[in-house]
Amino acid sequence: MSIEKIKDNVYAVTDGSTRGNVAAYVLPNQVIFVDSGMHIPMIKRFREHIEQETGKKASTLFITHAHGDHVFGNQVFEDCEIITSELTHEAMVESKEKNWTPKAIEEWKKNAEDPAGLDGLKIVLANKTFADEYELIDGDVKVIIKRTGGHTEGSSYVYCPNYGTMFAGDNLFNHSFPWGGTPTSNPVKWAKAIQEYLDLEVEHYIPGHGSTSDKEPLEKFLDYLNKVISLMNDLIAEGETEEEIVKQADKVDYYPPREGREQWKALSLKKWYEVLSA
Ligand SMILES: [Zn+2]
View 1: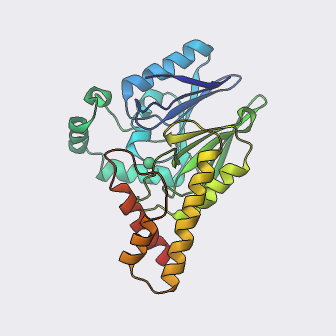
View 2 (view 1 turned 135 degrees about the vertical axis):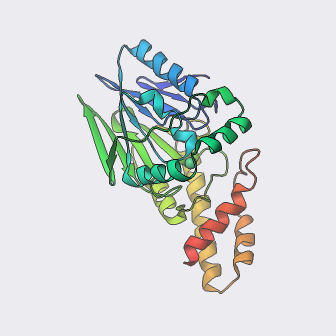
């Protein structure tokens, strides 16, 4: 695991060792963490390292959305406020009941790169929720968490204007095709969210997967999404079949999914078609 110091007071792990990226904002009197990844010992080390280096204690964990690779380290922050959108909280409650059963977790461990990363996994839910937006203020530093939808309906970003940094969660997969096949994925809300990110004063964007960037990959992704949306809308208006529309959209140029995730593109395009044709 390599801990990246993005700038003064902002740290992240984006090398894939924690699966979903994680970050820490160091505020005047506390440390705020964003997402908890999927490798409990590494998340614990990340927290300890930041607390030691800064001499400040973790107070809060913000959760961007309800996927296992972003929340399975929550137990490391059980003594903190764990804050997420109501919709993400509801999705986690549902997953805990239906998908994150002890049996399913055993299966995951068998297939994980490092099964020890999930040893002793306990599903820890948020203990505080917000509808659309929440602000945390410490001295003259403000951190905003705002729900936009996109990758999932509960998806939220965490923005610190003072530090010019945003953690975008899985609305950004820098330099690879994103996972857009979730039941609540919505390409129109997604494009709107990316435009909102671009309009903010941000120097460093931390994606849910991939490396930290400036605005360039966001511009590229927004351009891609807008092309797919307008192509699909035109073909839907012309009465084309789903099969033909997905086939045409597949030709729009963009990064492929990461290795082993090749099926993501077809499933995402199918989902986006479903949303646009509804
Ligand atoms: Zn996700």
